[in-house]
Length: 255
Ligand code: ZN
Ligand code: MN
Figure 1: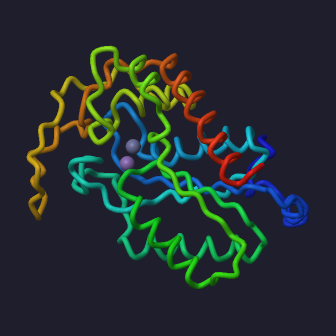
Figure 2: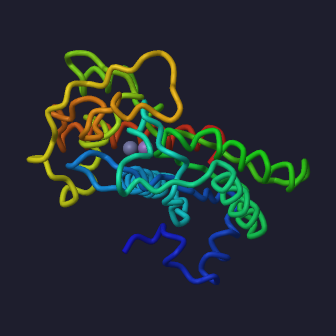
């Protein structure tokens, strides 16, 4: 079992690690959300956890238990709320959970926290949770927080290798080549390649309608094809992304 998991440590061992001034704690954040017929509902949580764990090993950090529920799935980025299995929080709930755990980590003496987001829709509600916690902790708090969406670390050079025929954009990447390849790399047993759907990529207008137009979303829940996915592409992306995140942490938190 990996030694970087906070949930596997005793409080005594955890406290001992906190004596190290440069200790970095990583908090993965995901969602329980449909990811097509070929990927599990927990994909966003599983990938943020795997990436956080790999990064923790590189920066000698620890990983807190994943926030496994996220903000509501939107049609253009996650397929929407109409799929069975998609189980989401109100924005305020997510912000308050984030605020609460950040405040607890600060109480423990964590000075460097990295929030690793794996679900597009979480971003502003996590940002709100960070802001509420920082305001409550006050200007004298030594806590510094980095928030990131892991896909933003994917370089142009990597994207060119993953998408030789052109990159459809991160929004349409839901359950498509990037997530499927990363899942094949980290959790091959949870991927059903034979069930990858043949749907055309989604073509959304530049506005939203409420209640959402579920007919805009491909019935499979996959927003662009996952056909080009492979474990090799997943390994390449995982290595580059986790190296880049580790470098950013070392730079900002001067490890
Ligand atoms: Zn996802
Ligand atoms: Mn998602």
